Structures are given as structure tokens and as C-alpha cells.
Length: 252
Ligand code: SF4
Ligand code: SF4
Image 1 (cartoon, rainbow, N blue to C red):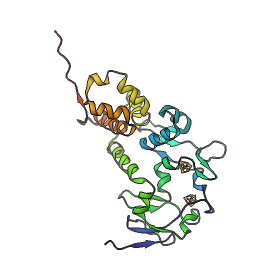
Image 2 (cartoon, helix red, strand yellow; image 1 turned 30 degrees about the vertical axis):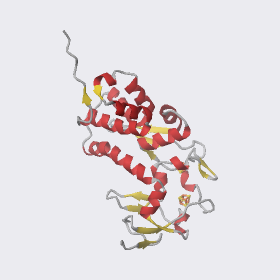
Image 3 (cartoon, rainbow, N blue to C red; image 1 turned 180 degrees about the vertical axis):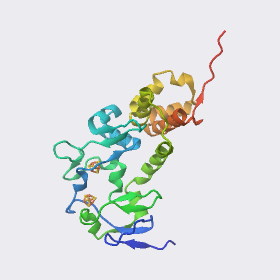
Image 4 (cartoon, rainbow, N blue to C red; image 1 turned 90 degrees about the vertical axis):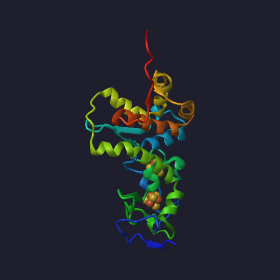
């Protein structure tokens, strides 16, 4: 049986593992309730966008236009997509006095707060009890249990698939300046509804071998479509054999 290790907000090691017990509770009535949903930079992953646009009943294009800021640079092949805060009060567009209106589908950083994940998969606190008063609440839990309660595992699974693209890019950014390729990469990751149209309304299925079960899966499920988009990008950028090109029919 794992030994229970306990930490409080005033005695914080730099690296917490999932067995650590931390003191935290966030709920209406905590003095700072919803304060952390204001003037904050929330970077959205492709899976965050998928969940949010479906929760709002919007297409991915509509969501990106209304609720995101896309930050691109020449060097960065995959732009950074950030949740757009309200201009007037800098609050998140989804927060009310009662809390997050998209709680079930809130992005990964909102689920993790006040924790963040270190590169070695341990956890650290990104704020302290003077700002996040929930860290003073008399409620304790294992970090591992708390993450499950917050619905983090599916986000971690999808983010680790996404990292199979972003990590090699960080190490060696390929020199791809063609704007059409850059747009294709962005569309495949963040504009899933358009990516689906691209697959089903272009010659894509004539050019690549996909079994019928896979075709049905990506037609019906955004999750499967996003996983497929990761494979498509690995094929396109890194030349990995994640897709099979159909042989060109012989002409007489
Ligand atoms: S998405 Fe929800 S939890 Fe995240 S900042 Fe907005 S209101 Fe807060
Ligand atoms: S600062 Fe902490 S306690 Fe306050 S609303 Fe945010 S997460 Fe909850």
C-alpha cells in the first residue's frame, strides 16, 4: 500500500506526485470564487476546442471566430490558440456568478487549476493560498483521485497524442513556409468540421486507403476524427507511415 504523503498550501514541495494529498476545495462561497476566470491566458488544445464547440452547439469555425485568438509566428508551424476574454471586463465569456457555464467541458488548464503539470509528469501549485483561497479550505484529497474527479484523464490521453506532433516540432521545427500547408495543419487540428468536409468532399478517399470501419468512425465521432487528424499530420509533416496511399490505377 502506498504511503500517504500530505502537503498543505504553506508547505509546498516543487514536485508533487499523484500520491500526495493536497488541501483544496473550490465552490460557491469561497471568497475568491470565479476570480481566476478573469484576465487569464488559457491556451486551448485541439481537444479543448472540440469539447467547447460541441458544448456550445457551434461549428468549429464559429467557435474559433467567436471565442479564440490565434497567435501565429513565422517560426511556429502550429499557432497558439487562446481563449478570448471579454474586452470590457477581461472575464471569460463563459463565467457567471454561479461559476463556469461550460463546467463539464471546460478546458484542461481550468480543470487543473491550481495545479499544473511539470515536464516529468509531477505536479506543482501555480498559485498560493493568498490568491486561491480554496487552498485554505479544510478538504483534502490524493492528487490522483482529484484529477479523476476533474475529468482530466481523457484530456491527458488526447494531449499526449497531440504532443507526439508538438514535441518533435519543438526539437526541430521544419522549414515549411507554404501558407497552404500551414492552413491545412491548422484546419486539421483546430477546425475539425472543415477537416471532415475535406475528407468527405474532396478526392481524399480516392487517394488514401481507409477501411470502411474507420471511415464510419471518423464520420460519426469528432474524437476519432481528431485522432485521425493527428495521423494525417504525422504522415504529412514527418513522413510517418500512418496512412496508406492507394496505388495509381494503370492507364492504357
Ligand atoms: S472556461 Fe469556465 S473554468 Fe475556464 S476560465 Fe472560463 S469560466 Fe472559468
Ligand atoms: S482562485 Fe481557487 S478557490 Fe478561487 S475560484 Fe479559482 S480555483 Fe476556486
